[in-house]
Amino acid sequence: MVKVKHISLFFWLLFLFTGIAGLFWYNELKFNLPTPLPAQYHRVNTDTYIDLNSRVQGYENKPVFLHFFNPTCPCSRFNMPHFKALAQQYGDRLSFAVVVINGKNKYTTTEIQQKFNLKIPVYFDTSIATLSGVYSTPQAVLLDAHHNLYYRGNYNKSRYCTDKQTNYAQIAINAFLNNEPSPVNSAFALTAYGCELPICKK
Image 1 (tube, rainbow, N blue to C red):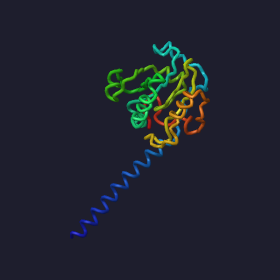
Image 2: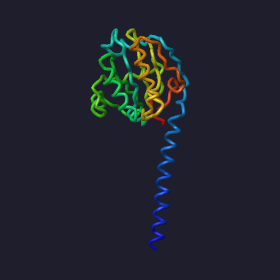
Image 3: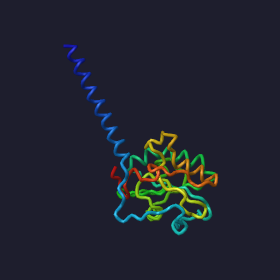
Image 4: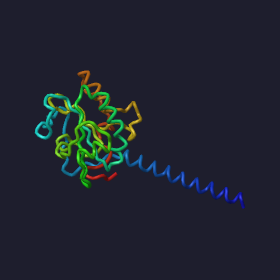
């Protein structure tokens, strides 16, 4: 009888762990599928001027790093520690800001800053995403001092940002600060992955 119980427990645990592994694999598979292009999407090329000053104040003649973020998007939440690390490391040379895009819930600046322990400006203007060619979250946008688009793309090949070889946003930042052309040309870096805007569908 005891042996039968042990066998039953073994198979129950095997079933449980198989289910967890399958769920993890399924989520990883979804993350690695490109976000569908919106029907009315207009591609925004590198060096395009992004009219930021008419939407947010205080960034005149400053390079700006914009983090496009959806609080209900799992990919965005996994990415937040990596983004905060970038803001801490490069905050003395770049102006950082978060652009929140969420089609379901309304948040305030204070709620976002407190919930995610952010000490940088938070904006809710969806037109900034359209101007920058952003249609998923999380996405990174780096503008030069004249607010011309230098980099728009993903942070990392891993949704947990654990692959140091594919820290695309950080690679772009380092090249920019060294006055070099962006070396980031990987299809995975420049093709949007993550949650569709304005609501999370992944």
